[in-house]
Picture 1 (cartoon, one colour):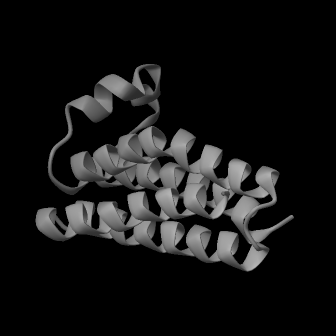
Picture 2 (spheres, one colour; picture 1 turned 120 degrees about the horizontal axis):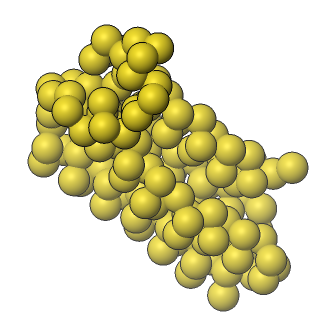
Length: 127
């Protein structure tokens, strides 16, 4: 398995980390598990921002996974290039989550752009 393929799984775990952090920060208890989305919709501060980072992670998941798979499937890019863009994406997502939780809005948007450019890089490399 290449690093780029493995990074898709890393993104899943990063999103789950955001959810767990949001719930822990907000005092999630067993009774809240009956409707966890309603619980998270009512939180504020860092918990709310971690939940928003989780949601954004799922929104960007499909384009990223598609880009990784297409870059591999076309055979047009070297594995090193594919892994490079995958690493840039994962690092940008970690930074994105940190910026979101810490309420660094402008930096968060910049870091999101880096991640999006890495998706484009994967598609361009596939040609």
